[in-house]
Amino acid sequence: MLAEIGFLASPFLNSVNKVKFNDLLRVSCLVQNQIDRLLAFIFTRPTVSLTAFALAILCGALWTIGQIGQFISFKRIGVANTVPLSTVFQLIGNSIIGMTMFGDWAGARSKVIGIAALIVVVIGALFTSVSDQKGQSITARDVIFLLCTTIGFWVYSSFPNIAIIKEQSGTGIFLPEMLGILLGALIYGFFTDRKAFTQRAQYMNILGGLAWGIAGFAYIFSAQANGNTSAFIWTQLNVVIATFGGIIILHEHKSKRELKYTILGILLIVAGSVATSFA
Image (cartoon, one colour):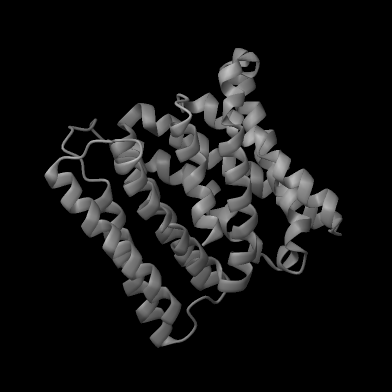
């Protein structure tokens, strides 16, 4: 649950601080969450092989590709269309990888329960994104682009269970993983808007970055202990806190129709996530 709370707190803290959370602010948030990694590495002094260190950097960098894919898709097809599509792609992709490569949900009974729970979570995620506002049109090219860049998220979510990584200490791969994300974020920021690194607003995201770092740290241990598939599905529970936090604290408006679908979606996500525990 620590991972879910951390992933939720990252964008939520930035909203509370009234910081415009655009592409480059997301990048600065990633840059600043390196504080978590450095502290964890300094105080625990873990050992990690050179090969695992390099692979963790690569996996972190691939995550940035997934995030950049979302940035571009936000502009092409809008946030309302991008978020549900990306969520579905990530849920299905991570589940397939978990079952085929890491032996998650072994046995016919487990697979039936797991796949059924996955379908419930996917439907729930789609329900929470229902909006009365008209979205931008979506083309096959847009869908394929988002799907291809989502591969970066698949690799990032799966890497804790890669054989050479799994035998390493979770704190040992924590720093190189985020160095890869930092490298990708810096390259993206350098080629899109170099002035962003000198803007004060960028550094107001430090709390969000710290929260995201804690979540990433917790996810490594969760994926290794619970399996890639179940660990990722459980992270979707941050939608519960995010939704009600946005409505109650940030005073985000939802129509009666939107609220009805949102509550139904949340119930489905919770039910599906809990069901994976029995898979």
